Length: 328
Image (tube, rainbow, N blue to C red; front, side, top):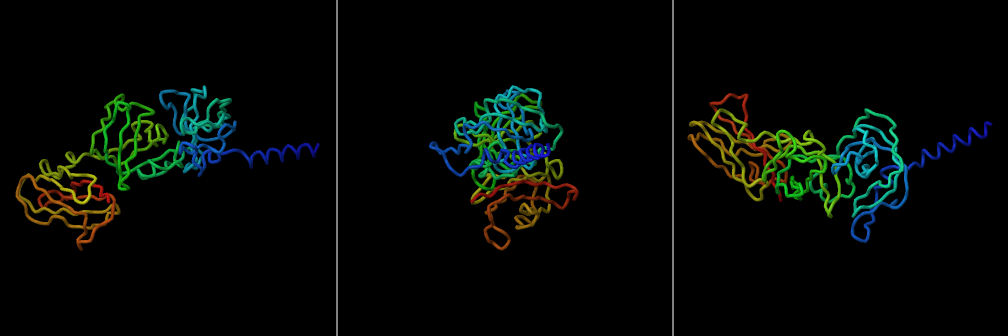
């Protein structure tokens, strides 16, 4: 009897040690014949556990993404047509299914079983990526990810796709895999040169491109427009164009009356790198050109920078700032 119990215990221990993980399914450095990166377990039936990070992809409530509890590269996967419509984000599930490739997108399909193990689990933290990493890295397929401080380079097309870029200089695709932007209240409108402080979602691969899909409007955070960020009712930064820029950008701002004006430029760490304007100026529209140099005349690196306008007659509690991205 003791021998039987020991054998069962050893069997459970071995199965635990050698259990297939999401990482096992996704990790690969070998491109396939079409330059996709197929799973090394393609065609095999596996049983794997994970935390549900998103539900309802492409309008199907039984399609969902899961991740290992720690998240990160190679640790997300898509479950296709599971037949289970009762799951919610934060559920821990065990899935038995076949590893398949859909034009380069690794999926768990032909699902045999989905078992709910627990609910209310914390969702893994999103991986913070550059748009270059988002656009080019197989490691983040099906992973919950974020990009920060981006500018829209292309508005939505008829397929719901749009493009953004950050200081890395490589545009990345956004898509509406979970909800249509015009279906929410108020509708979300994507305009070229709009800036977004944060975009979060799940990465998928479609038509040879990686794309980020926000799950809800809460995954999209846009900074206040410059027109609404006022020092006084008629004193404001109007625009910085072009943005992103290289080699120079022109800042336009409006003064309601004659005033002593200072415009400083700060990097993303909050360090002042340049005083662009420091003089008395008349009321009206003004322009100041920044060529991407610091106070010593040396060129600064690619990245996110902030113009801050201050005037002597305005309350110090108010600031007017404008974010720009220097690309080299």
